[in-house]
Length: 314
Image 1 (cartoon, rainbow, N blue to C red):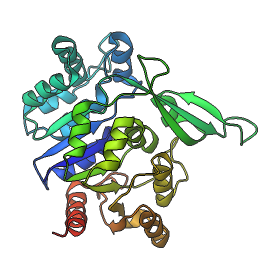
Image 2 (image 1 turned 60 degrees about the horizontal axis):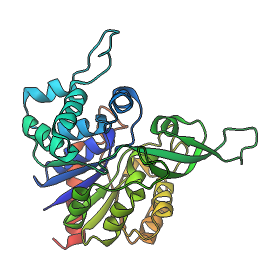
Image 3 (image 1 turned 180 degrees about the vertical axis):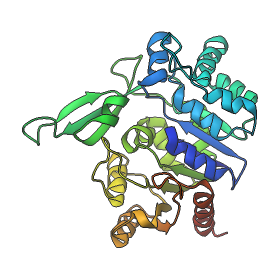
C-alpha cells in the first residue's frame, strides 16, 4: 500500500511512526516555510530550504542506527554552531553540494537507512501570511502577519493564511513535481496532525499540490490534533479544525477523520462536520499514556489501519 503523509514537525513524526507498522511504502511530503531556530538561521544565511522538518521526517523513518541519534544531536555552547542540529547542517550541506533538494534528501535517506521517502512540498523556501484579529483594541480589526514563527505564536485569532514564494516576491508557490506525482500515485493520503495553520494547511495552498489532493483516487484521511495549540488554534473545537480545512480547500473531499475519543466533547458535531466533507469520523483512544498531548504510534497505526481498510473495503 502506497501511503503519502503531508505535514511537518512533531505531528508528521507521529503519523510516520504510526504508518511504519502498516506499510513500508511511505512518502512524507514536508512543509518548507519554517523561519525560526536553526532552520531559520540556515535559511537566511544560505538561502536554502529550512531543513528542520525534513530532518524530523527522515529520523521518523530511519532504521535503528547510530546515525539517527547523531542526526538529532544539537550543539550546545554559545558559538556559531549553538542550537544547530547535526542533521540540519548535513541536509544543508548536501543541498549545496548536490544542487537538487530531492536528490540531497535521497542521499540523507540512504545514510540513515530510511524505509520510505522524504520530499519537500516545494523546492524553494516559502513564506506564510495570516489574517489575524484580536491584536488591537478593536477586536474586529484584521492584521496581516508574516512568517511561520509569528503565525504560530500570535496571541490573536488566525482566520486565514496564504503562502508566498520567498525568492520570487509576489509569486505563488510551486510544488515539488515528485510530491505531486506521489500524491497522484498514492493509495492513501494523510493530512495532519500538526500545527494546523503552519504545518497542515500550507499543503493545500500550493496550487499543483492542491489540485493533486483534489484529483487523486487515493483514500484521503485527516488526523486531528489531541489538543488545541496555543497561538494557532486556541479555543478551537475538533470540528472547527475541519471547517478551517474546508474553507481553505472547498473542493477537497475526505474519506475518514481520525480523532482521539477523549479529545472530542461533542461527537455528533464532529460526525456532522466530517460528513459534510464526505467522511466518516473514527473516534478511538490514540493518546500516549506518558504524554496526553501526543499520539501513541502503535494505537494510531491500529486505528488508521481499521479506518483505511473500512474505506477501501478490505
